[in-house]
Each structure stands twice: as structure tokens, then as C-alpha cells.
Image 1 (cartoon, one colour):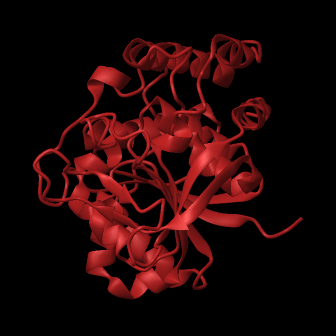
Image 2 (cartoon, one colour; image 1 turned 30 degrees about the vertical axis):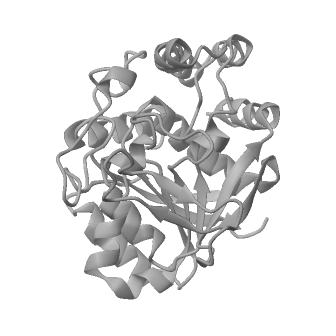
Length: 313
């Protein structure tokens, strides 16, 4: 078997974040070194709690969870309880976690891990606001070159915005952090709304999780039923988009996705466009490409992978 890919998931769970964590834990190709929690969908105490709830649900209390930044670099925190519920994981009644939160700060864990592991061997998977990652890069610029790659969920171009008319939530919450990461020189793959809005939790796809008949399948079904309502009402679609697991799916099977290397700039000063990811899809500027921006996705293939892996837990 080829060597397992070492990853760190940086997250603000969120039902779809929880699905991404479960997919990673169910996939032997991946070695999850740790989970770093950030404020985003809900405040930091809840995201740090929820990450541990998910690890315990998957039977993996050995995965270390670290709490990170509790507010954006320069702005007040904006949360999304209107989507995810008060706890961030509404929809499934799960026990409080018994596993401890690690004493170290997430940023210290990121710096120490990237300095310890061989250069280029660790992939960062940020699926919330980029505050922890940008703070790490600012505090320890030497580690940027040691990052294997960054596979992030965030941004949008053709799908414009989901929290403002022009901005996707993760980028909008901390655009200054996103700007630092996009300018870092690290190898970046972006899973924007342009891709994630194509993986919809239709009724048959949710029922496939229900039929698993496992505690994980039951929790996932509850999360999706809850999470889906908001987006179905908003978009008038047949299901809600399942954003964050797209990052892990891309690591497992990049053939499911298509996109192109483009330049992506983050708008930090716009009157109406703060947090916009300005993706030069058509190559109309001379700005250097800095990200693989994914747009196409095989949704049936994605859900087949997700269901097959979740069934293993």
C-alpha cells in the first residue's frame, strides 16, 4: 500500500465539516495527524467541542483536537447558527465528548508539526475561516515552504456568494486571513461553491445513509436532514450542497473533479464585495496563477465514495 498521506484538518464544525472529518477517518489512505478548531460556523468553544464529538462518534478518541483562534484577525466574528443550529451540529443527539481538548494552541501545534515532519509531507485541509492557517504563516513564515499543499473549501466565482451577494462564508468571515494564505506561495487547491453546489443531498442520497443502520449513519442522516432545510429553501434546489467533504474527496479521488490553475485574489476593501474571491478564470489579467480552482464534479461518484466510506465506521 502506498504511504498514507498526512493531513491536518482545520475546521469549524458544522454538519458538513463533521462529514469531512468522518470521511477522512474512514479512509485508510489518509493519516489524520490532528484537528485544529477555529471560530466560524459557531464560536470556538463549540467548534472545539464538535470536533471531539465527531471523533468519538467515529470511534477515534485518539485523534488530538486543538482549539485555535476565537476571532478573525481584524474583524468581529460572524457565525452561522441560522444554517447549522445553536450547537453547530443540530440534527443528531450525541453525547458530550469525554476525550480531552489538547492543552496546546492550534497554531503552536501547526508550527511544531510542520517543523517536525519532513518538508512537503503534510497537507493542510482548512474547511472553515482561514484564521488559524494565516496566523500560523504570519508567526512562523519558515513553515510555509514545508507545507505539502493546502486543500481548502472556500470562495466562489460563478456562484458568487452565499453570505453576501459576492462572498462565500469561510472567506468572508476572515478575508485578511484568506488574503495571507492566497499570497503565501503555498500550493493551493480550492473547492469553491462552484464545485460544492453541484453535490446536493437529494432524498435518495440521504436515504442511502439512513439504510446503513449504524450509529454513524443515523447521525449523518439527522445532520443532513437538518442542514439541508436551509439551503433547499434558499436555493430552491432538490437538496442542500455538501461543501466540506469535497476537500477530502478530492484528496482520495481527484478524478471526480475538474478545474484549472488560475489567479485568485481576495477582496478585503470592497464596498459591496468584501470577501469576494476574484478568480481570473478566463485569464484576462497577467496575474500569476496561485490556485487550482475546481469547478466541475461527478456528484454521483462523490456520493458513492462518501457512502461507501461512511459505511466502514
